[in-house]
Amino acid sequence: MPNNNNASEFDRLSSRFNSIKAALPQKAAIVMVNFFKRNFDVGGFVDQPFQKWKKSTYPGARKTMVHSGNTRREIRKIRITRMRVVGGIANHNHYAKIHNEGGKIPVTPKMRRFFWAKYKETGKEYWKGMALTKKTHFTIPKRQFIGSSKALEKAIDRLIINELRNVQR
Image (cartoon, rainbow, N blue to C red; front, side):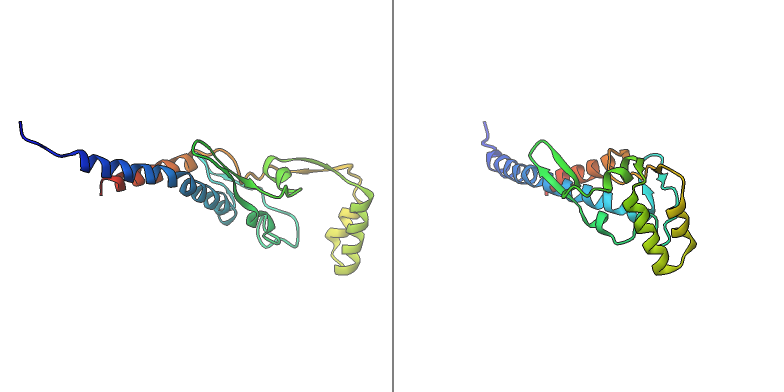
């Protein structure tokens, strides 16, 4: 019986597979964070089908959901284990959740003072209308940027397949 010493080849492949398996959650987390941040560039939640955000009426926004860029910058990897990767807003940004899920916020006297101050500062009728509104709450439309997505699942599947193909090389 000939001695085919495939044990060394098997050990090499096994070692490469284990190193890729250890690095895969970190790479998947990077793909996930970049995917969520890209939603701000395209103006909606990338899924199947694409969910475009309702246009913002706020006069200071450069684009919908982009005024200062803080929410986008705060998207990061929160927890990475071998079995689970979690990404989101790390420092509990108080307005990110309401934008992601939609909902209602009450109109407070402090908000009205802010609207009057902005009106006096800018002279824009938008702020005067906000200060004089009879509404007791504002409805924030759902502008999802973080969540489960078929497109994200496909991107992570492609990453895994490419990494497994690299084991053979």
